[in-house]
Image 1 (spheres, helix red, strand yellow):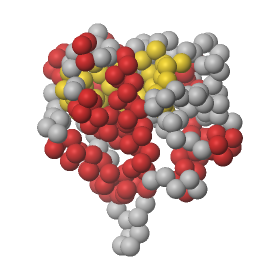
Image 2 (cartoon, one colour):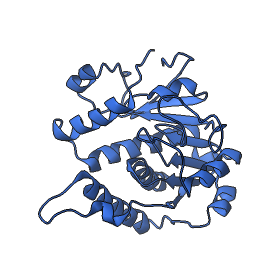
Image 3 (cartoon, one colour):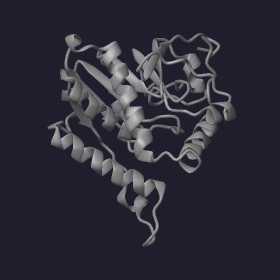
Image 4 (tube, one colour):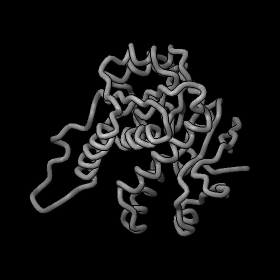
Length: 254
């Protein structure tokens, strides 16, 4: 099986096309992404391996995917907890009366996702070091394809702790701290970060060629027009599966 990686620029354009031309909302895309992440967790870390799952969320859409995944994991029978150290700043979502922007929608969506988790008694933790020692599995939903580096506080120390821990990790779209094109940084936090599993959403990103581990693809909702426009060759998902495990080689082809 050979799947084409999509550049960060095209990934942004694809998301824009999905919302402006495809009729999708940010909420819908985040829901499907989070569902895919939760199913990948189920495949690599069954309940019998330990129910405690720590979901580490960043301030953007990648973090929103993590919040959705945490909700699904709670419904599956896991005991998720969420570490959300830096949410989007409120002033970024202020708009003129009568208008709405994607970032404002993102902020409101984040609030709704937090309420949904609180209604399921999913805790938002503040002591990351202790939670990291007590968890059986970690979902890295800090940064995705829009990350440009370098890591800024508080995320540098967070990535360093994840990197040094023995807990297995699933990264969402890209291991946090990795450049979407050139992969892991040459030094500093994340230089030796290699999660046990990676799920690429919609399509693999170029940094996947540096990855060694179990690799999944998720995002079973693209139309033929979209896949043709971006030259994507996505796998035939079997049955009702939302994710598929695929390999990767040194050439970045899956």
